[in-house]
Length: 148
Image (tube, rainbow, N blue to C red; front, side, top):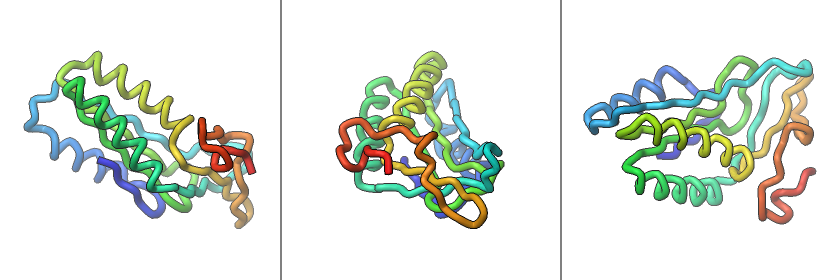
Protein backbone atom coordinates (compact mmCIF):
# COMPACT_ATOMS: atom_id res chain seq x y z
CA UNK A 1 0.00 0.00 0.00
CA UNK A 2 1.39 3.35 -1.11
CA UNK A 3 -0.18 6.53 0.24
CA UNK A 4 0.64 10.09 -0.77
CA UNK A 5 -0.45 13.11 1.27
CA UNK A 6 -0.36 16.85 0.77
CA UNK A 7 1.72 18.28 3.62
CA UNK A 8 2.99 16.62 6.79
CA UNK A 9 1.99 13.09 7.71
CA UNK A 10 -0.24 12.33 10.68
CA UNK A 11 2.07 9.68 12.13
CA UNK A 12 -0.24 8.49 14.92
CA UNK A 13 -3.20 8.02 12.59
CA UNK A 14 -1.22 6.21 9.87
CA UNK A 15 0.69 3.87 12.20
CA UNK A 16 -2.45 3.03 14.19
CA UNK A 17 -4.52 2.42 11.05
CA UNK A 18 -1.85 0.22 9.44
CA UNK A 19 -1.52 -1.85 12.61
CA UNK A 20 -5.32 -2.28 12.83
CA UNK A 21 -5.44 -3.40 9.17
CA UNK A 22 -2.84 -6.13 9.73
CA UNK A 23 -3.29 -7.23 13.35
CA UNK A 24 -5.32 -10.35 12.48
CA UNK A 25 -2.90 -11.65 9.82
CA UNK A 26 -0.60 -13.48 12.27
CA UNK A 27 2.49 -11.38 11.60
CA UNK A 28 5.15 -11.74 14.27
CA UNK A 29 6.82 -8.41 13.49
CA UNK A 30 5.66 -4.92 12.57
CA UNK A 31 8.56 -2.57 12.02
CA UNK A 32 7.87 1.05 11.08
CA UNK A 33 10.40 3.64 9.97
CA UNK A 34 9.41 7.29 10.46
CA UNK A 35 11.34 10.01 8.66
CA UNK A 36 11.23 13.44 10.28
CA UNK A 37 12.44 16.78 8.88
CA UNK A 38 15.48 17.85 10.89
CA UNK A 39 16.33 21.40 11.79
CA UNK A 40 19.59 22.11 9.95
CA UNK A 41 21.23 24.96 8.06
CA UNK A 42 18.46 27.35 9.07
CA UNK A 43 15.72 25.66 7.02
CA UNK A 44 12.08 26.12 7.99
CA UNK A 45 11.16 22.79 6.43
CA UNK A 46 11.33 20.78 3.24
CA UNK A 47 9.11 20.63 0.19
CA UNK A 48 8.70 17.56 -2.02
CA UNK A 49 7.80 16.94 -5.66
CA UNK A 50 6.73 13.37 -6.41
CA UNK A 51 6.60 11.70 -9.83
CA UNK A 52 3.78 9.28 -9.05
CA UNK A 53 3.89 6.87 -12.06
CA UNK A 54 7.51 5.86 -11.45
CA UNK A 55 7.06 5.83 -7.68
CA UNK A 56 4.07 3.48 -8.01
CA UNK A 57 5.99 1.11 -10.30
CA UNK A 58 9.01 1.10 -8.00
CA UNK A 59 6.82 0.45 -4.95
CA UNK A 60 4.87 -2.33 -6.71
CA UNK A 61 8.15 -4.10 -7.52
CA UNK A 62 9.14 -3.91 -3.86
CA UNK A 63 5.72 -5.15 -2.77
CA UNK A 64 6.05 -8.18 -5.08
CA UNK A 65 9.54 -8.89 -3.71
CA UNK A 66 8.45 -8.87 -0.06
CA UNK A 67 5.35 -10.97 -0.79
CA UNK A 68 7.71 -13.83 -1.73
CA UNK A 69 8.98 -13.61 1.88
CA UNK A 70 5.44 -13.77 3.28
CA UNK A 71 5.68 -10.12 4.27
CA UNK A 72 3.78 -6.93 3.48
CA UNK A 73 5.13 -3.44 2.86
CA UNK A 74 3.40 -0.08 3.35
CA UNK A 75 4.63 3.43 2.64
CA UNK A 76 3.36 6.98 3.05
CA UNK A 77 5.07 10.12 1.75
CA UNK A 78 4.36 13.82 1.63
CA UNK A 79 3.88 16.07 -1.37
CA UNK A 80 4.51 19.77 -0.89
CA UNK A 81 5.66 21.47 2.29
CA UNK A 82 6.60 19.76 5.56
CA UNK A 83 7.93 21.87 8.40
CA UNK A 84 10.82 21.08 10.75
CA UNK A 85 10.00 18.32 13.28
CA UNK A 86 7.13 17.01 11.16
CA UNK A 87 7.12 13.68 9.33
CA UNK A 88 7.37 13.37 5.55
CA UNK A 89 7.99 9.61 5.23
CA UNK A 90 6.74 6.43 6.87
CA UNK A 91 7.53 2.90 5.76
CA UNK A 92 6.51 -0.29 7.53
CA UNK A 93 7.08 -4.00 7.08
CA UNK A 94 4.79 -6.70 8.46
CA UNK A 95 6.36 -10.15 8.54
CA UNK A 96 5.92 -13.56 10.16
CA UNK A 97 9.56 -13.39 11.34
CA UNK A 98 11.44 -10.44 12.85
CA UNK A 99 14.65 -11.05 10.87
CA UNK A 100 12.78 -10.71 7.55
CA UNK A 101 11.15 -7.48 8.74
CA UNK A 102 14.41 -6.00 10.06
CA UNK A 103 16.37 -6.80 6.89
CA UNK A 104 13.57 -5.68 4.59
CA UNK A 105 12.97 -2.30 6.22
CA UNK A 106 16.69 -1.48 6.04
CA UNK A 107 17.00 -2.45 2.37
CA UNK A 108 13.77 -0.68 1.46
CA UNK A 109 14.67 2.61 3.15
CA UNK A 110 18.16 2.62 1.60
CA UNK A 111 16.77 1.86 -1.87
CA UNK A 112 14.14 4.55 -1.41
CA UNK A 113 16.90 7.15 -0.96
CA UNK A 114 18.51 6.31 -4.32
CA UNK A 115 15.54 5.14 -6.42
CA UNK A 116 12.34 6.96 -5.49
CA UNK A 117 11.43 9.80 -7.87
CA UNK A 118 10.99 12.41 -5.16
CA UNK A 119 12.75 15.75 -5.31
CA UNK A 120 13.53 17.68 -2.15
CA UNK A 121 13.59 21.47 -1.70
CA UNK A 122 14.62 23.54 1.30
CA UNK A 123 12.10 26.04 2.68
CA UNK A 124 14.09 29.08 3.67
CA UNK A 125 12.93 32.67 4.05
CA UNK A 126 9.66 31.98 2.28
CA UNK A 127 11.48 30.47 -0.73
CA UNK A 128 11.61 26.93 -2.10
CA UNK A 129 15.23 26.11 -3.02
CA UNK A 130 16.39 22.83 -4.60
CA UNK A 131 18.43 20.89 -2.00
CA UNK A 132 21.14 19.71 -4.40
CA UNK A 133 23.70 19.03 -1.66
CA UNK A 134 21.32 16.61 0.10
CA UNK A 135 19.73 14.98 -2.95
CA UNK A 136 20.70 11.75 -4.65
CA UNK A 137 20.42 11.42 -8.43
CA UNK A 138 18.02 8.61 -9.39
CA UNK A 139 19.93 5.74 -10.95
CA UNK A 140 19.16 5.33 -14.66
CA UNK A 141 16.76 8.26 -14.74
CA UNK A 142 18.54 10.34 -17.37
CA UNK A 143 17.48 13.96 -17.15
CA UNK A 144 15.21 13.17 -14.18
CA UNK A 145 18.30 12.11 -12.23
CA UNK A 146 20.44 15.12 -13.01
CA UNK A 147 20.89 17.76 -10.36
CA UNK A 148 19.29 21.04 -11.25
